[in-house]
Image (tube, rainbow, N blue to C red; front, side, top):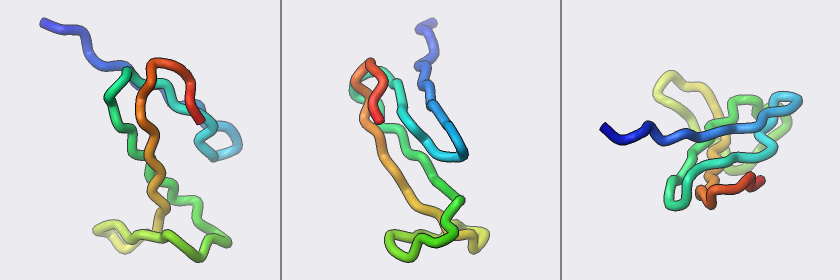
Length: 63
């Protein structure tokens, strides 16, 4: 059995600061703290607004 893929997400003050994931792994973060944001908003199946942010794994901390 292979080892599970590990993804680390650094959150500070409610915001994603950096992501560490293996190369080739795409990490999608849905940020629901959208007060004051007017563009790039999406709505989930429950009607809650969020902003999508994507990080591509490099094996190092990327923000």
